[in-house]
Amino acid sequence: MRSVMSVSFPEQISHELESFAQETGRSKSDIIKESVSLYLWDVRFSSLKKSMTSRAKKVGIVTEEDVFQALP
Image 1 (cartoon, one colour):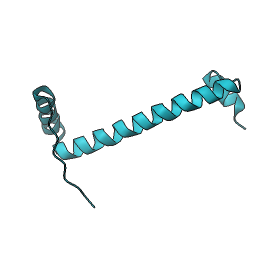
Image 2 (cartoon, helix red, strand yellow; image 1 turned 180 degrees about the horizontal axis):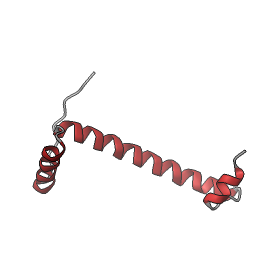
Image 3 (cartoon, one colour; image 1 turned 60 degrees about the horizontal axis):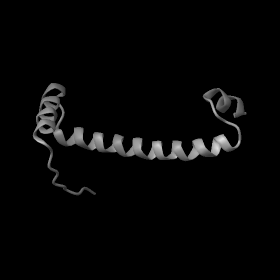
């Protein structure tokens, strides 16, 4: 199911979006859908990473090397 939304952008972003759509041959709608999806994933990942970082520090995992050493 789809829903239609109306979003307003500052003029500069609107021009950049239009140019990018023309350069890539993609629709503005597709670019915005992908951008929002990536943004939401990034925000969720950052939140999870922050939560896991504090938990990891409590058990002595501080570096990426510590992470790989802790894996079976």
